[in-house]
Figure (cartoon, rainbow, N blue to C red):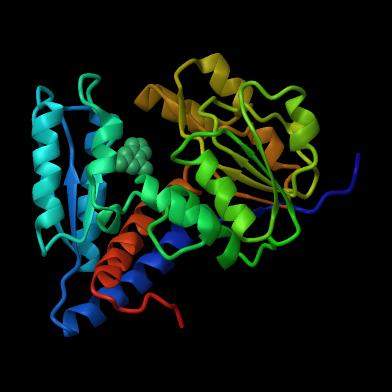
Length: 314
Ligand code: GUN
């Protein structure tokens, strides 16, 4: 048995609290100048998961002193009507950030809508202009989850420059922007995905491994380099007691959660892999906790950028 030190758990909830406190202070400084940052959230139809996320976003705005407005058009809204809504929000001076909660109903043209949001109010960082700004290192708005990953690494004093970073997953929301931010921070970055041949060969070389695939426990212990930093972006629900026992053997607490709630949350990294890590983000309580904090930060950044106020941190 090889000698291993206990892995460090990267507490996303604590880091998110720290960021929210800093954002609240920034909001107060703006309020003293007569500026109240404002976020508009569009939630279409009645998708339970989206309703939970949006409620949480609106609640956090309130806690930080950010004005928020929730728009809840029915599932039947057309692309044209949505475009009109976005256009109104683009024109409003009291709105600094516009967030269209995804996924949208199938009949709505998501791409067209994301491109209709003013890049300066695009707090999700999904607009092609902000994608371009991120890749060319210009000031702009970057996607919240990848930005949260970078904050976890930075605030935990984990080195990035010169490290081998492997991102598993190539989504526009997480995988690609995470890879871009890591390369901007001077990591050597590899993006792997469902078509990657010999995935383990790549993941085993990773000093920093970001898993954003959306499959429960996909990254197994043997795929991980001992001592690596593991960043688990996955939030998957398992409902089968055999699966719960496979991921969390002998875990009475999780067995009880399954009995009570009907599901247990597991990330994209198998819990057995965490034991080999130098540091890792737990699920829940890791990366997920950062996403809303970074949305709040982006809203304040948008409020400042739009008014030509410096966004430099001291
Ligand atoms: N749905 C799931 N994740 C996200 C996100 O980061 N932003 C938006 N707008 N919708 C989402």
